[in-house]
Length: 133
Image (cartoon, rainbow, N blue to C red; front, side):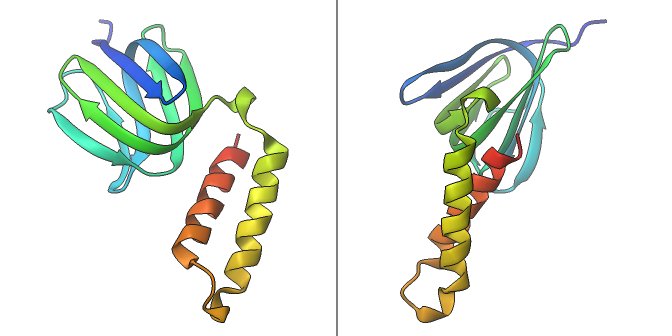
């Protein structure tokens, strides 16, 4: 028996990133890693930087870097409003490597009091997610 499908929309500020049927979507929230199937209880969630995995009806898995945003889950539709989401081929590896280096340098100087540690840690997280592809 085929798994039940739901409509998945991923919308970013500059485009409709994904619009199609899926049997499962996995991503990271502020509460931890989650996987969602059709008929899930309705809820909203806050996205944390991590890997997004979409399992399509034919079993194909697509991955992307999902950096921030919100998720609305309904029984037959999931909408992700993503502030930042990128397919692996769209990631600028050199830029991500430079961001990682900058964040690590800032964190090394965190005792100076002039660095926003939380902001530097988040920048490092974003860079590492991008470089994981």
